[in-house]
Image 1 (cartoon, one colour):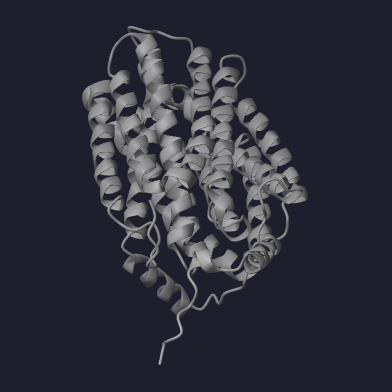
Image 2: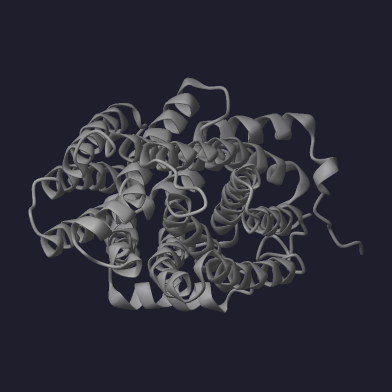
Length: 426
């Protein structure tokens, strides 16, 4: 008696394949459709607002050091408290979105962060500004925790890498624009006015996001019971790859933020003595990140995430090495290469999360981004110690150590299957 064997994938009748394709098209948002364009545009606006609000203060650090008579490490707190509270909020807003839905949480987050930024521009004392920046970070956690999960649920699996890359491209443009606008404006107006401009732009982005983002079709509400949260947490950390991706997020973001936190101090000092407006304009290096996030994300869909991750980290190391030389041209090229590599690596790692996490995807994204922004907060301020001890050489040593860890983690990930199931992937 012969045992029945299920047909292989290539033996599935064409009619059945067509039926499966139609079913997937009804479930997921396909590339090339109006819904796909609305989704990526909305998430682009959300990413723009998030990073503009978060990093608009970075070019101000030397100015804040002078105005409030504080050192570089203390000045960096205006960024670190925001990213630290964002990291903390991710542990809350991700699970909340698993219960109440993706879009409502993201919309509320964007509007709250924009309003808190407007309020921070009107506060007189350093400690009051820090407190409001903490609220900005807490508010932004609502979008940062949920955006990747929304894309992984709603976009067709074949196009997730591209969609995630475009979303991260919005992050890059937001980070560039926030730094560029404030970096140039503070040479002509007060930093308070510059913050009002950024807050106003974020309000517009929030309104566009609210109007055009499609409602979730594949969201399924989950319980907020502590037991279910603990089960999800335990499941993610038992996976062979997810904890490594969390660590990767920490060291990559820590390295990236440290470089941009203190490059301004270097370029304002000898032998460069650059104008603040020109230092702020160097944020255009983010254009390389805008390109790489979409390009590398699409390449990862074709060539495999395992290959692309360690390759982009190697680019970051090359870029850092170039910044260690004195000629300004080499420093700027190094910043371009470093930024290209970072956004490519982040695009690959973040899209990998949605594929490895089979359940509680919102919680998995939250843990990844918790590590991401914890790296920004901790390493961003710790870098100030290395700046005071060794100048740019100290910064290079610190960032280099982080990137070596990132490369070792990427090589470890390259030995694991892309998916937790028995599926093999390149």
